[in-house]
Image (cartoon, rainbow, N blue to C red):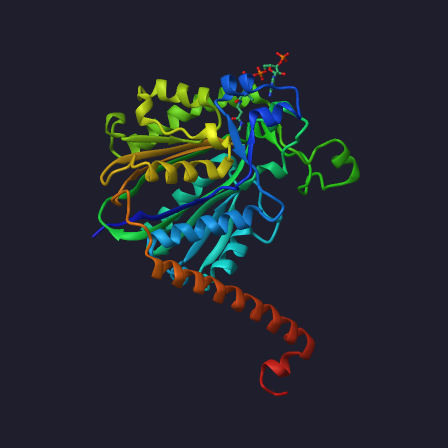
Length: 377
Ligand code: ACO
């Protein structure tokens, strides 16, 4: 029997703080009218001082595991797609692994700009189909508010913070992730870039003074690129799945700009009711935008078992990617029972005690040396 990668759990986490277009108009020379008509965005969420890419990712992951009814200890792999990792290293995925107590899981970050979630989903599906993994957690998480120049009106109006996650599990049959198409064109690397802070231009007072640690973007060129690749990648993924566009129930595009989404939908001859849009609420949350939109589409009952959904993204790199999923779970699903939520809560408390214990043991080890560890002292 063929093994497929089914999405069995999903979750999101959005910061509470809402920043509206009118709020932004008090900071930079812009207006609600300009932002709405040029982008479709009305508001975005902004992480507070206690929130970070990892904390948002952890909360989205816990929600996804709850829906799947899966213990974190059964995870084989955790992939965090992000352009705003907690640190250059260690990977944010390892912080998620520790907080979840996913003691059997490998963990790494994936950097492919806003296409990161589709890249990660594709990789996770292949790991499951090959038999290498049974249970994989895929997260898209971002705190773009930390790398946006809040004085640059051409970029600061576009981005927001948030995280979305899915649990992929091996299942028998021919559903789940049916196909994926990934692409890249590094000749456009400079069109969307944080010029400094990496090894090419390490951070220095000069790079900070020049604002080179912020997002720099050629909006018009990125726009042109996006309108070229969104429809093409979607069509290729649909063909690779052996389907036609008529068989697609819902397109969930990267939520960057309503005009880009409308242009892709037009080219694919998809009516508005078969295209999911929530960017008016959250702006562009980069690698988190597709999983957040997927969660909300499920919550709104927009996906039924057997439906085909196309996830398509584009972003820095330049990169693009599309995946076709045959939806397998009945929606809306029953609420997670209280006992399971309590058991999970206890499990996560235990994971933080375990993490603390391991840190203390490591300190003891360094202090007392190997003989203590070997029971000789
Ligand atoms: N408010 C008011 N005016 C503005 C603003 C603003 N926030 N931003 C720019 N303008 C001005 C410009 O200065 C320009 O003025 P000028 O004509 O006097 O020079 C004018 O508006 C038009 O600027 P354009 O850049 O031509 O505006 P456009 O219609 O192209 O919209 C936008 C700009 C929204 C950025 C669009 O190009 C876009 O969405 N591009 C794609 C960006 C994107 O999706 N990036 C994310 C990629 S994914 C990732 O990996 C992070």
